[in-house]
Length: 383
Image (cartoon, rainbow, N blue to C red; front, side, top):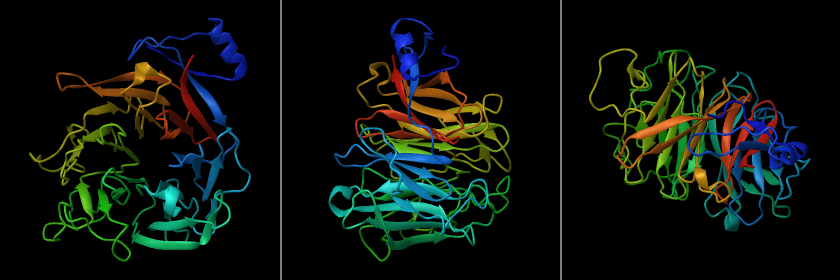
């Protein structure tokens, strides 16, 4: 099993090619993994997403409120794509500019969405923006349209991840509102937008519409926006670009971190258990049969805050094809996860780093990147 991963500079690449300094992994394949630096001078980067066009650009969120562009040559552009420092900011450790999603038809309509917390109140805001009319590397700062605003009672567990699903709807990850132990009981409250995964139609309605097949679309048993409940802080989630399955990494409380799985044919309405369960374990209250348990968990002896990643669908590392990669913010460990032919889920350590892993990223070719809060973006490679 690989212990400390190589961060590959050009000299190290030459050493690796010569067979010097090689560290081999045993699972999922006997490969020497490395992390190739892309940029290393960002300010508290939290997320990375690739532009869904042919530009090869990568967009990186800086927590204080800036979106930066890495061009197709790996250069960090000096002028931010969008600067929101006057709207947001790190008023608490888990606040700031937290999420970014391009509209599926971005190449034609120039529309994108962001998730941030307000500088004044700390409340969650999801907004739509447009690129500028004369520069594809600049957004129009005056184009903001607020889609939804959600009260945040505490400074932590703000969620922040947003992504368009294969169905064209916008999914929004919301934490339970913060503090500890879910004192507001948000996770098990189907009439709260907290502790949940939301699903809305931003192409219709004003400012959005409810998809007809949302599990609580009629509003009788829960809020129409809800897609799934029972989440503590789904910091990062992603859809497999090949199968459309959904992976949700949910940050734990005192003992366990977890990864949840929602198959592509799900009709929604899953209850992932918080705050009755933490991972596979009873946390408080009375057990209930409807809980959907995680497909992977690890204890706080191995880390303290799970960071969800992506299923590898690139071509550069065939041995990783179909494996979901995820990590831990505190320990820097990266794990793999995959469902075996017998239906059981298997996971293990892929490699260790000394990074504060805030996010993974995936480019349009399916290659995977790791974002280090200390300032760097690195591509997972094999040499």
